[in-house]
Length: 135
Image 1 (cartoon, rainbow, N blue to C red):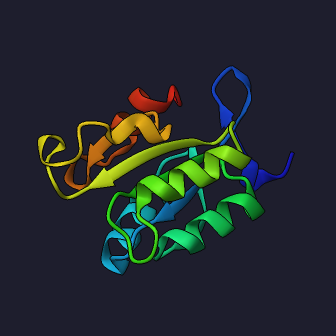
Image 2: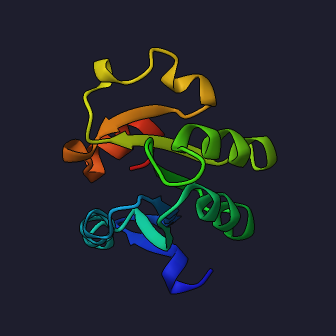
């Protein structure tokens, strides 16, 4: 196991890092989330995309463990991108993100297969761990 894919843990064997793909059309948000996750030993950002189609392509090529997917994207939206990813890579975990409140989004938001939703202002390692089971 390469050093980039494992994190030493006190008194236990190394745990694999969750490989993360960020899909958001706002570069500043991607930079902020990457910075946040780079400081966390449980996560490794492997790529970024700024549109739905690009997110699907990268997810199918790189097979990340976790995709952080903006709901509103240019081209196909985050819901359709999530459906396409999970149709071909069903073991991928997708968390939807939006600056809108959950109540302002479609009621069937999670019908696309995502495990959960976070407002962009709430994205942090503990919130991701609660949704994905990562530690």
